[in-house]
Amino acid sequence: MEDMTTQGYAASFTSERLLRREIETVLRLQATGLTWTEVRKEVLTRNLFQARRTSTAQTYLTLVRRRIAWLDEPLRSLYLEGARSDALAILLYTFLASYRFPREFVLEELRYGLQMGRSVITEEQIAAFLDRKCEQHAEVAHWTATSRQKVGQVMVRILRECALVEPTAQGWRVQPLAISHELDNYVRRESRYRYFLSLILIE
Image (cartoon, rainbow, N blue to C red; front, side):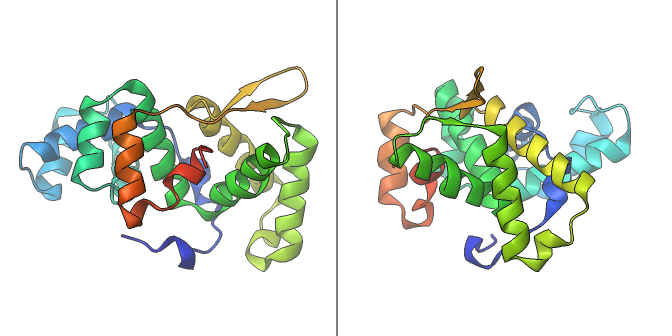
């Protein structure tokens, strides 16, 4: 598993999708005892992702593998058998744990905004966040204008699909995710998930 604190900035998450069904498919196969090699073969041979091209399914497998690496067995079980709200929270966590840029956006803009009593974020504020990161980090400064635009679009789309933001006339309304007591208690006990509740804006 990666260390969040040593991640660099990468615009590669623009190829990301929510991947809810794909992650569920892989976790259920792994729960039967299959190795990753066997899971990969099963997914590709039977086209379990219902992808039009094998290359697309291979890309999704790479993304899924990176995302589920952040989950231990109890969270995998909650994802498969728990409430829909828990599944969305776990999905969001795997995405934000995997990519520094959207993670910092959630913590520095959405979470800080809520702490300051601001429940709506505007397109101008999103653009300002991108500009600030360009000024602070050479990795981000090297992104093209097209890449920066797509970064913002994909980031907001996934946050919306996970119900962390919803569109309003002013921009995007920010809302903490509701989760079960079981999930809440578990991530509070486990030190490896010390950022979980902050990333879904509960803390």
